[in-house]
Image (cartoon, rainbow, N blue to C red; front, side, top):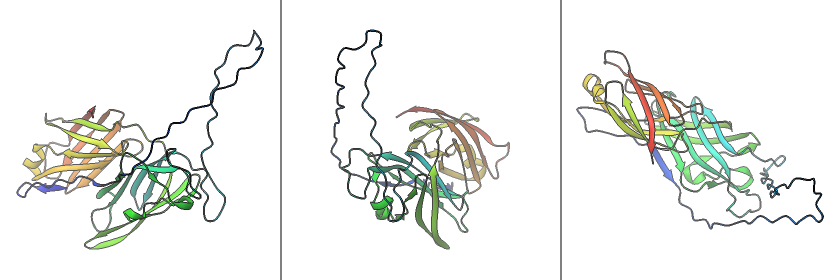
Length: 280
């Protein structure tokens, strides 16, 4: 969150919901091919590769089984975005009705003000080193985090979550589908403003979220606001957020980002912003 300079500084990191799970690592050794007797001299030697296993199917409570698309999934609910990565979690033992899939890097945007406006959002994250295993019959298995929904087809899923603010409350239902995300490097980034000021911020959740982007002192001097901003990074690398009259827009690609920062009450036009991935 941003704060007026006359008040104590208030920062707004994303709400982190970290999961800790213990899994036993397993090692699979591919079977070697049997030699072919009397090979033809004119035939070139070829490497034999083990057959790629067929991913397990989700068996819904009603309807036919299906194999969901692995990788990035995106969706919106009244303009608020959600994103996660669906992976095949081969270290988990297959159980009846519960396929070996897990969800990683789940990020959801929720309203910060009433009436809800996608420009004013906060973030919730379900992350961790290990994926969150799906529930039975394609359910997301996230009820312990207050979330519902599940996979309804090879390229379709829903995600449900509630929000509660002092003057409004409700439920968001994201309709999720496979997507291709532009690569954005996780870790520490260096940010530079065109007035010469610079600071660091962090990208996490598989390139989905940039956190703790600090406002320059020039904004506090003319607008009275100081603190940090978090921004969701869309699947094409774009991000934008507006809080308390301050607007930040960035476009990410791999280890670079460019954009602008503007604030009401500040003259001279928006500041140009550049950023680059450093390490970590």
